Image (cartoon, rainbow, N blue to C red; front, top):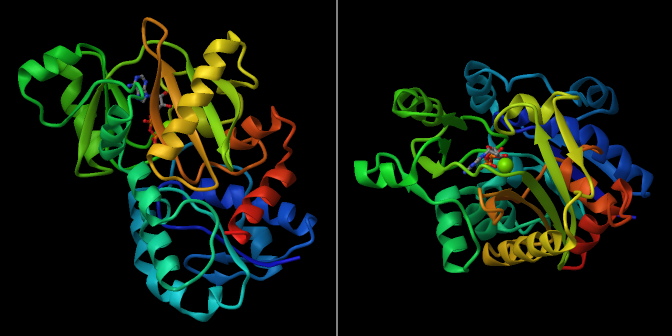
Length: 333
Ligand SMILES: Nc1ncnc2c1ncn2[C@@H]1O[C@H](COP(=O)(O)OP(=O)(O)O)[C@@H](O)[C@H]1O
Ligand SMILES: [Mg+2]
């Protein structure tokens, strides 16, 4: 039995996803016998009544508006939260947060400086995985296939070499926020604008035309491979969080050699980015069937039906056991 602060909320576009995850992780941890206080990054420790109203298991079709997020960010003070009483005196801080500063290493650095034990990757790994451009250089260096890319603006010959369509994405983001496909030069300005609204650095990538997969990592092993079949051209925010808009097939119905290849690449990616305890690695096949890594998620979605829990379930690890293992890995560090 441990005393656990479940830290959730945040002021990123993925705030609702975090609150939905917390609504399921909290009862799972209590079911394991732990004493759990849910701490929201702005409100601080929540009463059980406030938990009931704030932690909504469903996620709206679109992320909160930029105005709503700016207002939340104005009220949020992560350095004061981490240094203050809200997180003091626990055995463990369990992070159910996504995107930006809370997933990308800044919160992790604050927790490290405060000497607080927390779940998942440390500040360095979180930062390496959050920045898709640095990530892709590390992948290339490790010999792990990833889509050809450039940082916007590109010289016209380099742009031409990538071909159409192109995927345009913010270098630092998540949940497909700001990610769009430009099918020709006419669509490029709007696509760049959409990505730039999320991050000042914008990547353009060769479009990977094949099927999409994901694989979880837990401890030092890769979990089961799942296929993602979104009803849109890409796995966008709406497809990610609207029930029925995506087929998620676990385990993926693919030749064992392809599954083994992605499990090996997933583990290699986890190691290349110096990740810790758990992660989820996303893939797409290119036109000739080669699995390419899209990105690594250091704090992947944690509702019962999220992809990491499904990847674990294919190996017989249910949601409670996954939460227990995430705690164990952090507590035995
Ligand atoms: N190079 C690509 N080719 C084809 N589809 C892509 C490519 N990059 C991203 N996508 C699509 O966009 C989605 C989101 O991209 P991703 O890089 O995983 O960003 P995020 O961190 O926002 O999830 C992917 O799940 C995939 O469907
Ligand atoms: Mg992704």
